[in-house]
Length: 337
Image (cartoon, rainbow, N blue to C red; front, side):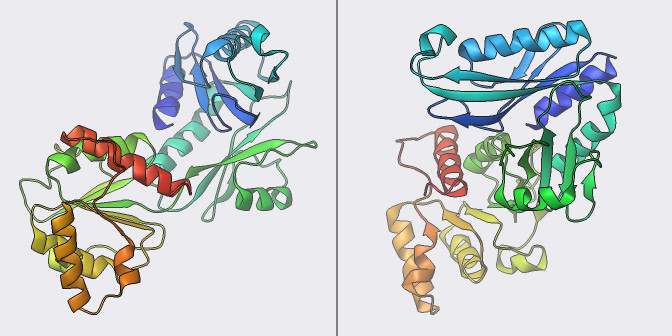
C-alpha cells in the first residue's frame, strides 16, 4: 500500500492528477476483497491491482475518463452474478463496488500524512474513504492521538462503531468505507542471518513492520536491512533493556545458536506476544523445550511457539523458507491459523 501512496504523491510532484481506485465492497467469489487498491496515472499506467481481468480494465477506462473530463469522484458496482459473469469477462461470481477518487494538488497534505503514518506510526491509524459521487474527493485519517483529520465533515458519532468493526461500508447516506491503514505492533526479528535477511523485505511487503535485533555488529547493519523499521544491536540475554513486547507484537527467533534461542524464548514466553516462532530442526526444538520445562514453563507456554517455524511448503533456500514463515504469519494475522 505504501508504494501506491508514494506513487500518487510523486504524480502530484509532476503536477499531474491521478485516480485512486478502491474496492469498498465485495461479495461472493470476487477476485479481490474490500480494501484492494489501484492507482491510475495521467499516462495510463497503473500501480496495484483490484483483481485483474475485465473489472480492472473497465476500472482503468473509468479512471481515465474521470481524468479527461475533470471529474472528481465515481462509484461503480460490477455485478458478477452467474448470468453476467460471461459478459464481464470473469470466471467467478460475486459483486465488486469500486470507488474512484481523483487526487489533485489539494490532496498533498493527506498523502503526506498517510505516508508518515505508514512509515512512523506506532498506533492504529484508520483510512476513511467517503463513497459518494459528484462531490470533491475526500480522504480522512483517524487515530487516537489526532482524532479525525482531513475529513471534518464526517460525523464522528457515526464513525466510531465503524472504527471498531474494521472495513464496513455504510449502506445509507452518508456512506464511507473504513479500513486499517496502520495496525499497532511490530515483528521483532531476532537474528540477521541469511533467512532473516530474506524474511525482512517479504514481511515489509505484506504490511508488517520489522525491528531487527542482533548481537553481532556485522549483522545489525542498516545496509543489510534497509526495509527494517528499526535495528537494534544488543545482548540476547537482556532484550528488555531495549524493547517491550506487547500483545500486538510478533516474535521470530532465528539466531545461529541453540543457547541464544533458548535465552530468547525464556524471556519472550513471559510476554503476551501475539505470535512466537522459532526456526530449527525438530531435534533442536525438543532440546529447547526440555530446557524450558526445567525453568518451570508449562506445556501451554511451550505450545505457543511455532517451531519448526513456517508452513510446510518444502522450502530449502533462505528465500523459500522466508516465504513459508511469512505465509504462516499472514495466516495467524488473518485468524486462519
